[in-house]
Image: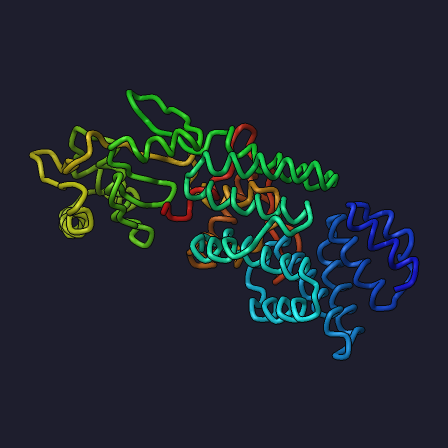
Amino acid sequence: MDSLITAAARALATGDPLGALKRIALRDDPPALALRGIAMAQLGDLIRAKALLRRAARGFGPKEPLARARCVVAEAEVALAARELKWSAKSLEAARTALEEHGDRANAAQARYLEVRRLVLIGRLDEADRILTALDPGKLSPSLQVVHQLAIAGIATRRLRIRVARDALAAARRAARRAGIPALTAEVESAARVLTAPAARVSGDGKDRLLLLEDVEALNTSGALIVDACRFVVRDATTAVSLTRRPVLFALARALGEAWPLDVSRETLVARAFRGKRADESYRARLRVELGRLRRELRRLARVSATQRGFALTPRAAIEVVVLAPPMDDANAAVLGCLTDGESWSSSALALALGTGQRTIQRSLEALAADGKVQAFGRGRTRRWVTGPPPGFTTTLLLPAPIS
């Protein structure tokens, strides 16, 4: 590499994209295009960054597999930042293999961490953990050690293992100081704020009480039967029943949980489960069918029994029933929670992360946009949705993945 390329690469390694562009902004050879793409990514112009990296990869050609593999990894990182979560895992794996064969262990590790971060975003925590366990951060640069510790913290946070998350964030802070890159330090502090902001709420005595993540963790081991409206799960300390794909059943479970230890009238249950419909005889019959299904689903956790007025929920072993809800009282809280990470998301990425249909996500986004809570830019496949984080609330993205 010539001196300008070397100097630009060093500038990018220290988080100085403007310094890199001063040296290579007018050059169109493949190494300069690749570095320009990375610089534009650091400056936030992800669309331009992707185009430059693809031009660079084409320019290197098949006789320069190492350079092309580095471009593939850089493009995958840009895609992750743009929340394009459907990029080809096979291409990234082939690039990682090529990097390892040519002795570029740092970029090979970066490829691994990109896959880990993607898996965490879409809730596949066990796969992410397996990859992470196989990596040795002691042999990595301080900047990659930050990425490693942030990945540990992300998995631990979603599993509600808060002490593990705190320890990982402390290690990430130390590594960020050694790296001396302001952007990494800011990323660590942003991740740490999740632990000190309300993550959920519970209702009692007619009042809502906000919970931090450590409070949610304590609640999970308190012996209570939890109707979790963040993950659409009913669980106690040993058993969890997912109702993610059974919205009517979960609506009934939540209504019964909120009324515990009292019962709920049939009229109220019909309105909650069937979107405000009047409780005529046909809906009463349907209610009996759905409650029978709910009774079967929850048979290991609780009894659903009929009363003179309606129905009541009685836990089998738990000492109380608690309804855990998102901190934001919004029907589209899960979508809004994803967007509050400060990144721009496509509807397809949101659907993948939340495990639901893209059309469902689009309806939620349209409703949020009508309320002025989110905004879109771009058209067609390049359309992205953004919002600012609500003051004082952590993202609810930390709650969709199942606790294990």
